[in-house]
Image (cartoon, rainbow, N blue to C red; front, side, top):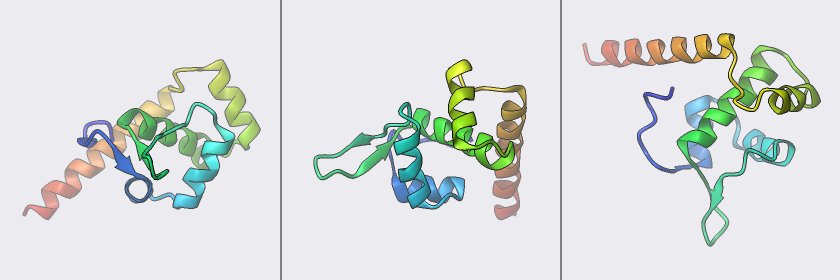
Length: 108
């Protein structure tokens, strides 16, 4: 994923599409995870940076892949501020490889 992030800011719908997560889930996670706080425009539209997207990926990994409850995920992120695990790194690397392969196939 990190190699595929090219823009400085992404709208909620773009992040939802990239990560295959409903926009409502992203907004809910903002209320539960204080470190996830995308910038906002004057009109209140959320703008996610690549760093915000990586935070969302980690939250998604903890909740959906690892099966942690929100409170457990909060505790994990508090104890591990970088939010990185060996498993998460592997998952992200595999996602990068998958995206690269899909691009290569699409260009055939």
